[in-house]
Amino acid sequence: MTSLEPAPDETSTHLETDVEVLVVGAGITGLYQLYRARVAGFSVQLLEAGGGVGGTWYWNRYPGARFDSESYTYAYLFSRELFEEWEWREHFAEQPEIERYLNHVVDRFDLRRHIRFGAKVTSAVYDETSGKWTVVIGDGTELRTQFFIAATGVLSVPYYPEVPGRQDFRGEAYHTGLWPAEPVDFAGKRVAVIGTGSSGVQVVPAIADEVASLTVYQRTANWCTPLNNAPITPEEQAQLRTDFEAMCETLNTSPSGFLHQAHDRATFDDSKEQRWEFFEKMWSSPGFSKLTSNYSDLLLDEAANAEWCEFVAEKIRTIVKDPETAEKLIPKHHRFGEKRPPFVTGYFEAFNNSNADLIDLEQTPILRVTEDGIETADGVREFDIVVWATGFDFGTGALNRMGIRGRDGVALEDHWADGPKTFLGVQTTGFPNFFFPGGPHAAAGNNPRYNGDQVDFITDALIYLRAHGCDTIEVSAAAEEKWTDMIDRWATRAPSFGEISYYFGSNIPGKPRKYLLNSAGRPKLFAEIDKVLESHYQAFRLSNSSNPARTGA
Ligand code: NAP
Image 1 (tube, rainbow, N blue to C red):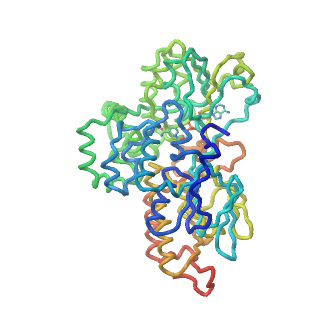
Image 2: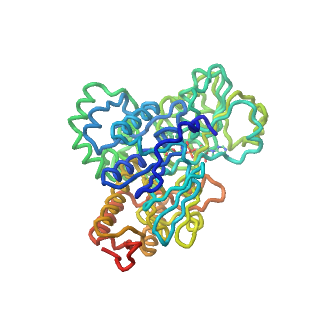
Image 3: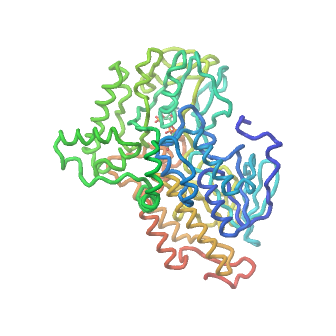
């Protein structure tokens, strides 16, 4: 049990054991699903394994954890009042503020009374006769629900690599994705950080100045660029309020769910001098704009991508004083965007501290963890604290571990043995009345926007079913196959990109190399949703479990 799991006496309230809609996960997506289902008049219950709301923003409370999408674009947009009464302090909010915001939302909309904390789902089984799901939680309690909606996220199962001796370490060890509630005291400690993805590169500068020594174990250097965070001024707060409707329009229609506008020029439309001037603008621009507002061919043309990478490499060489460390920090084997790029504040600068060291695991791999530290081919370094920033079993991790059984007792993890098969990233064939917004084949952009589209689609489908005397919905095998094939085809459309990202499951040994997000993007999701609505849900079979004659709508 981690200290983020609730004490037993906190878990005993708020449990309806027979509902129409059961949601799993009190993250941004699950809370919105709970809200929408309740407003639509369904009886609801939400189960959450942790001791509070926030989902990924509950478990990932490591030092430096913050949004890298703009706070107001990541927040809920369904209520103008909510938007106006919550003033984000920074353009990219830190974890404590995010957690406060989500608690505010839960209380503001009176959602807490529908949430049971400390309720980890251990199995969910579909009963063909009643058309209902039986869901069991950790303490053995059974619940029944018509619609089972797992909003369990794509980054919710922390991954520890198989390093010999990991359990032998006698100091403190933490995973960024399972951070304890009590603050960790880094002051004067010898600290190792393993992993340099978005989490590791946020931890490093956050603790660099207080530790006695900081050793960063890097397997793959990352294309980090500045987040360019700042406090939101009173004038900007006022402008955000004025621009609310226009902002919603942009976010609700943008291909990636960001405010950043696409650039209309390709890299080699400009001279080298113009390019470098533009890249300087990109370097100083906020968060994801380096990806979304850069030259239009950044992800499509190898030579174009190499130009931007050359610019970023020059920046790294300028920031990092030790040339050998700078070279190690420059990625050599992948292009910008081929892995999810992190956005940082003070990451490269941290290596100018005399107490900071970078270990390049390409040259000296980790051999084992010992009782006192970490051993590489260079010998053993001793530590007081080891931080595992080694990522997650992305996309399917949580769903494949929940004991989900569909028609004929088929296990979801078997149905997805070769990778996830979905339609719109919301349903899979053979698992009627089961939905998973924000799961595999979902967002490739600003997650809450995309996942919100899915929640809206699901809730509207449930309302439609109810209005047409149906209680069961199941996507057809043909629709699932078509959507999944399309995801797989689009995933490899950037000619210079390999299957090296966790987006393909490649960080987990033995996991099928299948694309785990929606590679075709949000416009394709919109187009497909429109088709479903126009055709009155033709891609699905709608029926009534107590009146089999009543099929379709
Ligand atoms: P990650 O991107 O998967 O990074 C994991 C790191 O651990 C990588 O550097 C990886 O190296 C390393 N690693 C894995 N196995 C290792 C081993 N056996 N030995 C040494 N190193 C090993 O995970 P993450 O940093 O937690 O980020 C996951 C995702 O969460 C992000 O991409 C992002 O979507 C989200 N996130 C967002 C924010 C935010 O700013 N809003 C912050 C944190 C996370 P390789 O690259 O060589 O595999």
